[in-house]
Image (cartoon, rainbow, N blue to C red; front, side, top):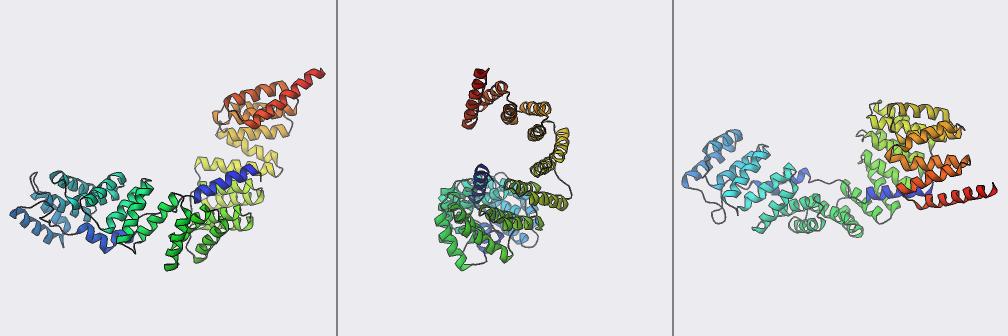
Length: 455
């Protein structure tokens, strides 16, 4: 396996592990009594800081609240009929909360917005509208709403945690960190606040700080899956690949892992050159109940080729096909055929390789990689006119033009057609200058000059 391939592969692994593991607000957050109390509160109003209701509106509100306890839909219908443009913002707030309870988030947002239009400093309306926007995926609007609520005096932990989550999703990591830290102060046992802070530290490459926090959290809760995954991310970020492998192996042996975790573990073993363990985890990933997209497994097969494990690659490709029953996308099917052709060529079966490649080109005439591989196969069979035809076809495809020109030139050099080879290399350098190609071009020019002198 050449150094360039190793460097690219390690870069890919570091890129994957440099990012935090997936994180969302947990069900515990949404169902926690602290959140329910913070969001629902009551349908009434706080006369000193919130919009006032007339006596008749207070009566309506009491009737609606009483009805909502057992028949929410009837309460919503009743209140909708009672609302008028000049009604108190408190009634719109109550309707918005009932809409939220019944899962009608868009209607809920509209009602809260009307309440805010009527009473701009309505703290609870700003906060609840922010939660609704969070549920709708409107993270920027939700962040603005939570910030406004805090500026009006809101100081509960769930608001700060939710604000941190919005900032995190918006990749405003410093702001997210500040909100999460405040959330931890107010809700010391909140996993959402703790996990969010970990992700902010990982997202800003502060791996040592993240690792220290994760070690502390795991000492209290050794079976926390998220913390084990995040700890592996921190370790790989610090360049401690063996320790990261141990962290993931711990998770696997606990029985709490996904196919993606197994692939990552396989990648780490590959990085440590423990290829048998690497392959074993790649195979486990394929057998996992919660499978990933076929493209993920095709990437593994490509990794096996890059390290020269051709028989393992061919076997893995067969397992992919048997597992997914050939229900591939057009792209995946093409990628699998290209990998098979590559393995066949590498194992001394160029004719079988070419047979597959011709099928690919027949179905995908603009597949430059297949055309270049066919050119190589023809070149190795000394069929130079056919090889030239394939290289020329590939050179007409933008993404493969430079590669095709260089490979064509290499073939011409092998047949001592230096002058034509120089022209092709010059053209390649005009399109995309490369130092190594420049050095190669200079050496061919020297050969051309030498051959002319001898003549």
